[in-house]
Length: 224
Image 1: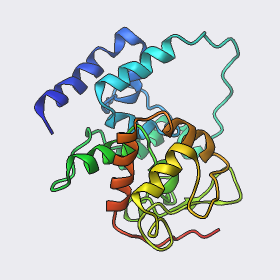
Image 2: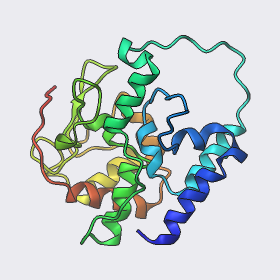
Image 3: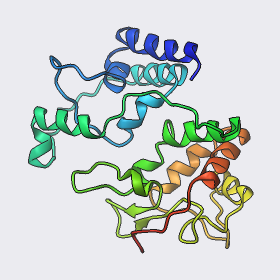
Image 4: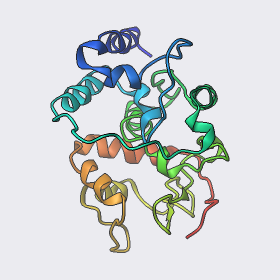
C-alpha cells in the first residue's frame, strides 16, 4: 500500500475528535483502558475505508438531529453483554489493517476489492458465520442464512451455485437497475442496497463486477 494512504488513515483516526466519536469508534485500535463497543452490521469493515469517505460519512452523521428517545437496552447473548467478552470476540475477528491491494491483480479488480470488502461490506451478509458469529473466511461470499428473512442470502462467487453464468455486464446492470438475468429483480433487504449501488459511477460498478468474477468459485453451503 502507498505510504501516503497509510498516513491519511492515521490522520483520519487522530483527527476524529473534531468530528465526534464516529470515526474514533470505527477505526479504534485495541486499548486495554477503553470499553469495548458492540459491533453492528458493517462495523468491522469501517477500518478498511479510505480517509476521505470516512470523514464524509462522519460529517454527514454529525448533521443529523440529536435523538430524543432513550436508547433501548442491548438485546444480545450473554457473552456479548460482557465488555470482556466483546473484547475477546474483537480480538478473534477484528482486523485493524487498512485495505491491502491484491498482489498481481489489476487496478480495476483492486478497486472492486476495496469497494466490496470496505464501503460495500458485502461479506457481512453474503459470508456465513461460525458459532460465535464471526465471518467464516474459508466460505467468503458463498451465501448464508438470512437472519431477518426466511430466505437465504445468495452466493456471489463465480460458482454454478452463484454467479458463475453471469457476465460482468449482467452484474453491472443488476447493480444499476436491479434487473437480474432471466428478467427477475432484487427483493427484500437487497433493494436499498441496489438503490445505493445505482448511485456509484459506472466505473465503480464495473470494478465491483470484475472483482466478484475474480473470486475463487465456492459452492453454497446454504440453500433456499
